[in-house]
Length: 80
Image 1 (tube, rainbow, N blue to C red):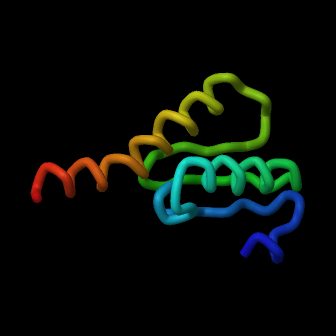
Image 2 (cartoon, rainbow, N blue to C red; image 1 turned 90 degrees about the horizontal axis):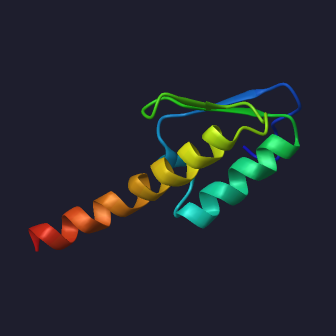
């Protein structure tokens, strides 16, 4: 997908954990797409990243990404 998107395209992802395996991966992928002029929409989180240098969108990406990737591991530990 990353090799096919072009400037002005919008990538829709069901959720953050579907786009990347961990928070570092998520940030790398999102920043790479933004640099190419691609918008990203996370449907489950109701978050749109447009590439505008907004401190709030950076914060939301980091916090929500951490929860999206950390919560399943935490729940697994509580169940076991």
